[in-house]
Length: 110
Image (cartoon, rainbow, N blue to C red; front, top):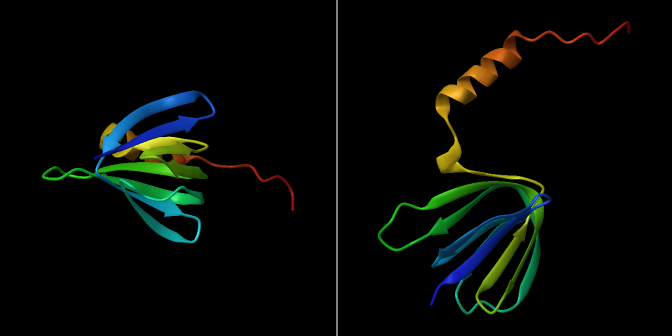
């Protein structure tokens, strides 16, 4: 049996993923979820969750807080925003970091 994970942001459903094992970044530690898990609700921290499939590389999704609830092999992850690791483009990140480093901020008089 597998878990069906629904990722939801304020913009609506981000995507749905099936997985055999899910590790959530709970507010006070990590929580591992397998199929058949008892109903459960937890606050999420700012970190990544991991979706594991047998014989495949895990998929990582960065979450910005939120809430997750589990019931009957369905997991709803409601978060402020998310970013799938496979969507990260190193060149774009380097450019953004360079731009931030070069920016000056006017704090005004002290």
